[in-house]
Image 1 (cartoon, helix red, strand yellow):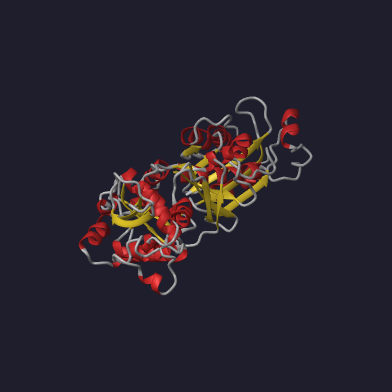
Image 2 (cartoon, rainbow, N blue to C red; image 1 turned 90 degrees about the horizontal axis):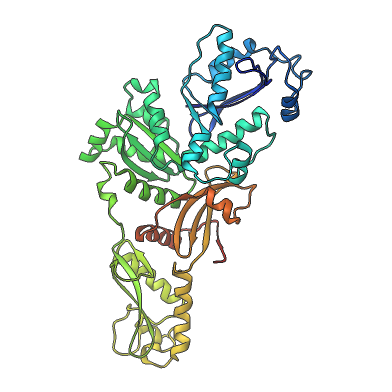
Length: 455
């Protein structure tokens, strides 16, 4: 659990500043579960430059509660939390100093979003909160006011969690969580997970990931894991001590995250999923008569594939659909083995390429149109689909036929600006398996839209 906060002060000499406004959002790693926002009477004058910066003046604070009047609420909302702030050393020092004046020891573990941003989003022109969130397309209203800055920090921290593919932030949080010292029951672990689409991470007592999975319903899938009596499930049940998760909003990003993070983290119980999951591929070649043929064959990384399939039956079913939609010849797609005309020619659905009757140029034009539509080569596009919340969309970026990664953006912001897009994207490795996942998903499912980009 995190307490994401921002504090505005009077300014002045070091350790003599007073709090003028405070905003705290209690964040469980996925959503805000509580909040506290209040002006505070600092019982000392505000420096003129601070009044100009924040718009908070002495008159506004005359009737505001003093710090000792809000101290109990601050303790309650930050209980059991790691403190998160943009320049956390400053906010922690100010808060600790105020509690010291009351004679109350207030100590919190801290995370600084400036330091995390420099590590996870390198080479940004500026790491000041205003300029950073603008570069990332994160909404920010009421700059230099506690509520506006804290709310933007929540969105920034959420983005940083998604970019932390090594899961260092979560791992460190779990190590510092006093509740983990209690022996959890499997039913308690399930209770704290959502019935939504995403990726889940099973961890042992040391916080190390031992299994990664994805599901359209995380809670339901974990229930299956924890009630199964096969050997692997029983071993997991004995070893698992906590489960963390990330909502993805849609299954395609869940599939891509699962594939990437299994390879990156190498969990002990994911051995089977480290291998590629496609067995057949579709290729093209030109026959002796000059016609472009399509052919299903076993997956071979040495050959250039149009698309890949999980098994032969899936490939054959897809090729029948391709043949029908593009008015191709069943003989030239390998679906009808004959030395004469194909079956479709006898019923008038083939124009005679199988018996050299259709002009080569006309037939090949339809095949080339299909290849251009389905091939990744020189393809530049965004795949837009549902996000984790109603006001959010997900984006998958393919540039020059290469999968660059995925990200999320707020509906209030345009994402066709390449510079902003690059900062939003969580960079991922492109490989044949990733291409298989994307092509296979688009073949079977509808997404909200695809956006073609200029090369």
